[in-house]
Image 1 (cartoon, rainbow, N blue to C red):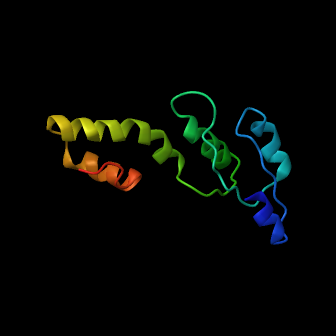
Image 2: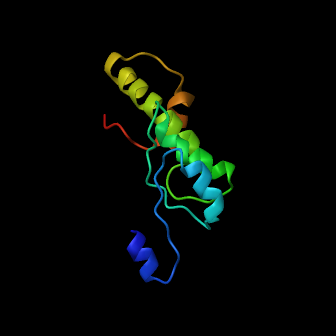
Length: 106
């Protein structure tokens, strides 16, 4: 991906999504970030890099922080609902669907 962007005459830099990113990103002054990183630590590791990008006001591709943070929680809850017929408010699943899309086939 880096070479494809560079071949179009653009400056591009690959950066790991580890702790060094906190120091590197502000120095690079990116116009946009093509985020394909999952982070390294914790349950919400997929949301870490987008959260940092938002704090630095750097536009990025991919899902937003809230969707990435909720996805690991909402998808298993939806499966639990479907398998056990537990009653949840309809609004909950409407919000889950719009945040996550149709992740689970019924």
